[in-house]
Image (cartoon, rainbow, N blue to C red; front, top):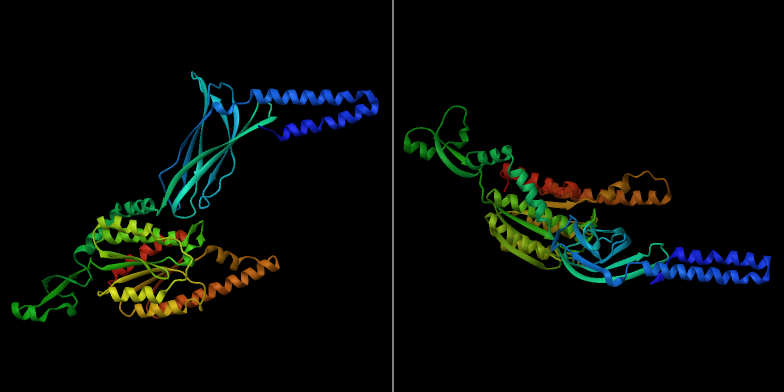
Length: 442
């Protein structure tokens, strides 16, 4: 129990009154004693009328898991047992450092009709910054008496664990929308049978208008008529998600670490690859190989990929591209689509990365994916209203120019590149995969 600011102001308000009384007559100093006694009595009465701590009960419901990028709800039920008067309660949740701090929530504990208690339900948002097992540590509550002069405070230890996992919910939602589209399914059906693919489908008699390069001369000689080959698009390509988990990928972008943007987009692409008949593998690396999964087909393997990506941790280590990309080259005997999701700062730090990506592209089709920071572009294009903003614009523009140099160098060497903002990251990656598959580049 402690006095509030209102009580202190009320107490201090008696000092000028006492001084005025003494100036009028010295014997009026007893006015101060009377005023002080009145303040103490009123404060004591306010304390007696306040909700007792023993009557305040708690019920806390924390979500078992939250998808990164979404927000959960911490549901707190406060009850004043045997209390039938309104009470104003301030509630502050003590959260893990990787959960966004929330402001003080003020609610009114209202009497429940036909019940012998007052009750209120509070929903506090839980916004994760990173993946992992995070904790709701405690609840701090404070409330005052009806006159707001005395304040009670209490701490309720919660200790609830909340698992923050990759955003599979968003992956399934987007996939469901895409695969439920009639146009998308129609395109898959055409691709499944006959098209400009690389897998032999059947022989048919040549008619004017068909490509004469498709004529099978040996089969034509056996059947004594011109026959041409028809192909269908191959559906068992190998796609390997190579996700960088180095220190650059631990930095937040739009409130979510780059690594989690990469995992969410990689899971979405994996889902589509498995649904369209391809085989999907996974490589997670930083200064060493942290996760390896051989390419396998079937939608049931999505759970395996989900479990492995959840184990990718944030580490403050430099990425070893030489080790990781050499390991991919050694283990993969068949030509595959390597989706390399990483990031870099400038041309100097990216030199070793570019050298190893170019070496990898000699045997495999490489799709280089990087996340562009929209804040960097805003600073580069900002109006220089001060010397500080001018310096920021110059530095941001230099970083953007060097980034473009690295991307163009990779493109000129035949590497497919995506450099996009987080809002369009997943869709741009998916569209590029569909374009590569349609053009049979693997």
